[in-house]
Image (cartoon, rainbow, N blue to C red; front, side, top):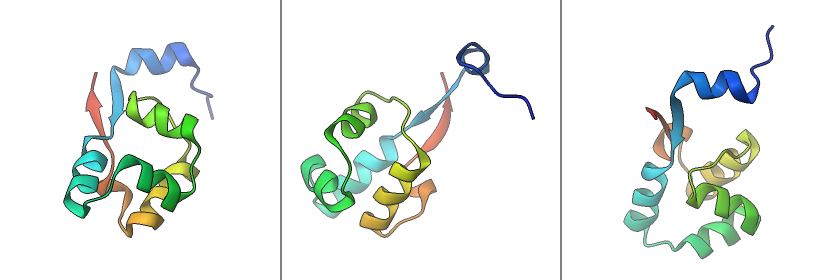
Length: 80
């Protein structure tokens, strides 16, 4: 299987959007700080999410567990 390097990923012109996560936090009355505490994720991972950066699937699983939701409830792939 081919390993997709950074250059190949840039050619995809797609990215993760976490807009669904931010809306879900509002709906639940949670702050980003509460999410970070409940999901037990680092401030650097939270910063990556805030900036639309890449985080590991492990981080997304922790968030889903804390919010009792599915990954499709917090993230989606959108055109860049």
